[in-house]
Length: 139
Image 1 (cartoon, one colour):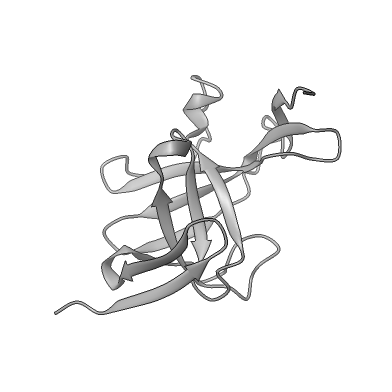
Image 2 (cartoon, one colour):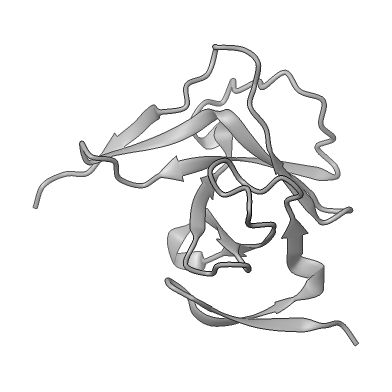
């Protein structure tokens, strides 16, 4: 029988996570190097976004999006296997200016076979850490 963890999250309430769905980030995420175990959540109401939730500190989560939703020509020029790995970018839902942005310079790579994750910094200046993809409209 597979082990399960019950985690109380800020946005999704209490969730049950199978060990087979836990990704280990040996180096953590940028700015959160002390957090290593994460679960990737797909919520129907927020498609195409996914949510990377820390199991070490469930109040910490990152909205993720496929970089090809933002730039169909995105080419990080890194070695990854599309059959075993998935690539996402971290989204800032609203900054101080009410803008939504994507960090195209530091993608997150998930290895679905090894259950590992890693956020890498691309060596090229071609992509921004703060690529504006939308602005909140006033109501």
